[in-house]
Image (cartoon, rainbow, N blue to C red; front, side, top):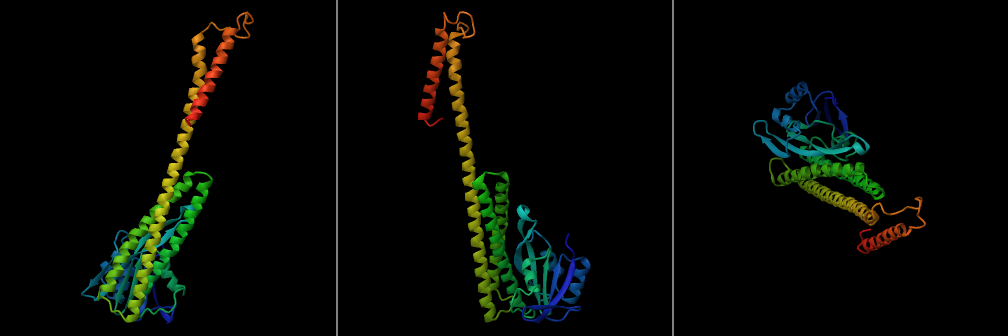
Length: 321
């Protein structure tokens, strides 16, 4: 369960936020899983379209840029990563995050707590000012890219751990872990490609005012997202290659076992065939008169051993035993 809350913050100094009891121009309003009352309150403070907030609360909404002519505000909607669960149950997924730029302030909207936004609240991002809307929005995007890179490193370590366990013994748990990580990487690559399209449009668009420093920051953002996408593709290829390799190993091991069982069946069938030729006319050592008629037993046993040996030799020669 996520607690709905409304936070209004502004910089007390570069890279440090001060919580405000009342909104001031240039402040940052952070909405996390807001209630209907909170949405109405925010819209009274900052005149933004209701659908801009709703878009960010829709998990299926795709990243894009939107502009409202009536309220003169811009929505930058991107997918940012987060993880849930612990240990082998950890899931890496993405969700929409809306960055709404208005002359009076900036509003971010998300369904859950976002790591990249928490970095601002904890003072982990240096030199940012919420009143510089464009630059702050780009810094949020840059933090999102760094969050992708951080989680991708976690995924890389999880892949290494699973491969180490698989090198000792093939286990379904590790294979399921790799499948889950591969699924997460699909989410990441899809979201990163969509975010790239948004950033490219930001670079070409005149919907938001940009200064020279903003253009440089925008280039950094694009570079970071390109790097994250390349890493996600590489790790996805590693997982696919690993899964294919272990599928081949499992298939090969099964073939070896089946080959051995088939060979043993052939070898054990030979004595039955030989003894079958003699039927019930063979006298066994414990039977009366064995000493007078022991040759059938010796011949049957000898032929069985000879043919078993020949069968094993032939199967070994054909690499079937």
